[in-house]
Length: 290
Picture (cartoon, helix red, strand yellow):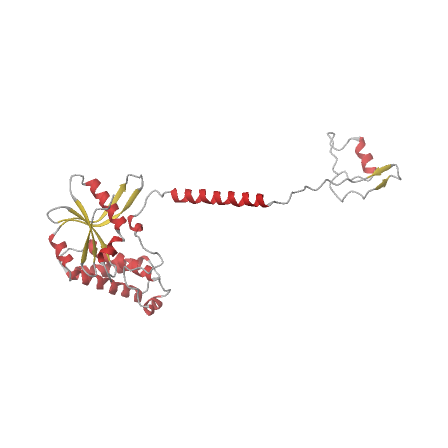
């Protein structure tokens, strides 16, 4: 028991309580139940009743589980409805993310080990794709050797940005990129590009669609061959079966580019194509079904 007084501890009755065995300030526990002061005062400590809690019933547990499930549903719906300020078209590809990346062959395991920490095949493929795109962006469209040299420059620049990339891995990436570009140089796509009017390469895209989502990225190539504007997206995938079916996995990405370019060139015909650089195959993307 703690006794307080408005007189800051100077009330005369406080000393009387002390004589009876009470603790005036926090300290040891109260004396056990007994007669105090020679039996003049009967002293009994009455403990405060412990709070009681009714055991949860089966219906209580059901309601808790139901409420938790509803909160989970609401949270999941809110997370799905949330939109980042900018979205990249290249992230829309329809594919099983557990599959290995098809955009370039994995570098040899020994080459990766020699370079230091091994890289995942998907990271290898991404870096080779960056090298190929960078070389095509700066190519003069005439000199085959300049295209391959551009791949070397891009690989060196990419390696300089990441200290973990050793010489063996960088050389393997250049070799993989050169293989893809050599296939392109032997194909009819290279001749088409040389004859076409190139409107832009790596053209920045910033487009807000009808739903309010804002898309940003870069369109690989815009060209004109005497008629409509052609939106081209380069792909370095290994085409093992049906190129049209593989191109269809990029449908959402191409449609975003097409909507953006059509919004900029409202009075012109715009169509889309996927160019598979390894084989020199072009797949024209039919308008999306509405």
